[in-house]
Length: 150
Image (cartoon, rainbow, N blue to C red; front, side):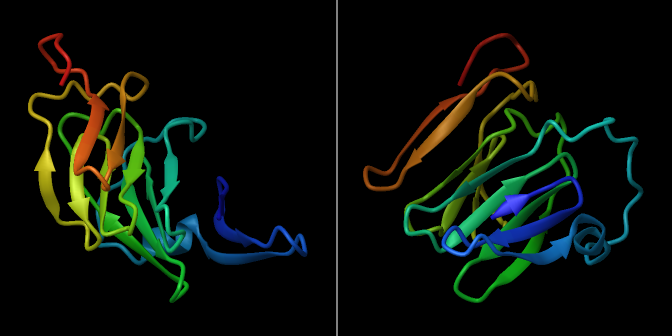
């Protein structure tokens, strides 16, 4: 999967062919109506990760999360609201794609929050995580608003 400033594309490394799945504008139009903020001049705060089985792809941006089901070729927005900002801007996915961590929130495939870090400061460029579903562990560094790290 290739995510550009304009669209989501599937890339076939064997043939070099690309197929547009949807545009950013088209995908956002499918979300619930909400007032958009003034975004940055360029998208530098988005990230994407794939499950180890290669069947699920999750992404996180300033305004939405998304899920791509590879088997069904289905792209879905998993909206969110967040205070503070959803940082660190990182995504980690379980081996089978049933869970993912985006920013400071652990969610299931439907986007429902199942756990979250307490007191995150929302910094986009500090911290990260790795979800080890084989061991049932989440390795993380999520800075808190009081200066500590979770």
